Length: 179
Image 1 (cartoon, rainbow, N blue to C red):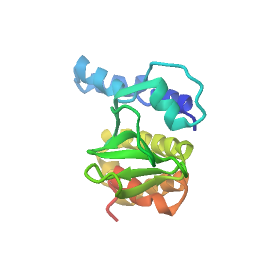
Image 2: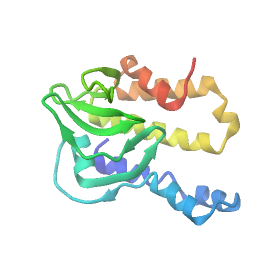
Image 3: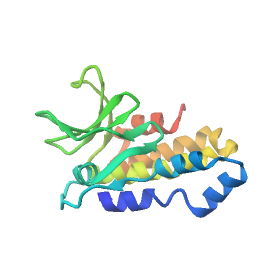
């Protein structure tokens, strides 16, 4: 999935039906705007960049986007080995410059890999979109939120999209799979 496909697919998550449900539940306008903003990247450029992660961060402002514990409220920063493009709580999401692999790096020690997240940016955005859709469903379904078996199945599915079993730890944490 490229950056544009990710951005367009993500903004479809807060659909009219979901927004109507929030209004019926008595949520105020500010809450609903924040909810919509958590899935909305704002275009800030249109440079043609082949790498989906670099294209996402260079061409879109993701300061309001929040997918579980994943945020994009950082500027694209590079060192000799990595391009840092987002956060997972306080830690950094980074793309390995040599392999293209997406990794979660410790915020106190940027040389320490906490989790491998995806084999490349295309797979990361695809897996993250699947996780975002599922996390949104969890918000309004208590039965689903307590179904550890299903949550873990989705984590496995996301890791497969990301490139395989190597990435399962990241998606288990993101989705709250404790099995």
